[in-house]
Amino acid sequence: MLSASFRLQMWAKFTIFNLCYRLLRMKNIVVIGSSNTDMVVKTSHLPAGGETVLGGDFFMNAGGKGANQAVAAARYGNRVVFIAKTGNDLFGEQVRKSLKEDNIVTDYVFTDNYHPSGVALITIDKDAENCIVVASGANMHLMPTDIDIAATEIRSADVVLMQLECPVPTVAYAARMAAKAGVPVILNPAPAPSEPLSTELLHDLYLITPNRSEASRISGIEVKDMESAQRAAKAIHDMGPRNVIITLGGDGSLVYDGKMFMRVEALKVEAVDTTAAGDTYNGVLASVIAEGRSLIEAVREANIAGAISVTRMGAQPAAPTRKEIEEMKKRK
Image 1: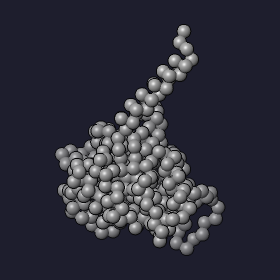
Image 2 (image 1 turned 180 degrees about the horizontal axis):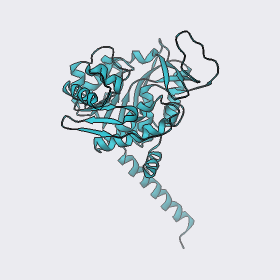
Image 3 (image 1 turned 90 degrees about the vertical axis):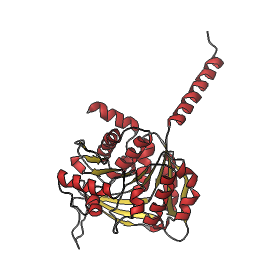
Image 4 (image 1 turned 60 degrees about the vertical axis):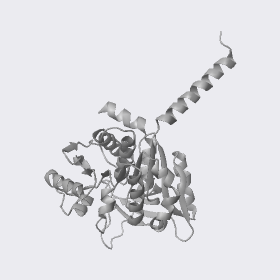
């Protein structure tokens, strides 16, 4: 009979082996972007101009497109480094604490002593539609010099994922750094850019993932059906990105790789809060692409993740784990 000490040694070796194997399988994803504290009111309808709506539930949680995407990517099971800037305040402290709970590397979440942490005011109606106002604060002071500090992580990443809730010149600087190192760059152009994105930035992108309105703004073609979505995707591709995915809500996703169009159907679910569905989608998309899997496979996983997220309240709290995505696939 094996002694208790021998069994304990074998269990410890097996545990260490599994941990090492998991770490070796994990890919490195760098997410650069915003971090906000979301203050949310759920009520019967979105107020019209000058209207006060009484009643509703209030809650507060971690948000920001960059942080939301980082959490979604990390819950899929890969190593995530988050590059951002917060204020020297309680919100900033809470951001770091929350990210660490998801095992996200926060060494490059910089502190700004002159500007407050970002805050988002969100109203959600009974149909899960939302209205969001963001006070960006320190997010808009993430500078190229901050990117330089994280250069080693960026150049050694399997994927770099960014959005547009921090300065566009900083996004372009990071994209150039990653592209020169041969790292695929994914840009979720949200919120929709007020000015045209530079040719240099667009040419540095492996993938761009606008939604319907963002694709309309970037391409100059109003996306109102699948035919116009295809024209917009081709126009955006011709600007420089190697691949284009236009997310179409309940109509799924349109993928264009410069050769053919592919449509991936959306899952039908009962939505309660759509606040961070796009962020969850992009985070999982980046995580799957980092693993070397096909673009279509990545979109299918991202669609499932986004569908799960809208059935839950909140931004980061709604992001599913890889296990939950696998379980949803079995039920489809």
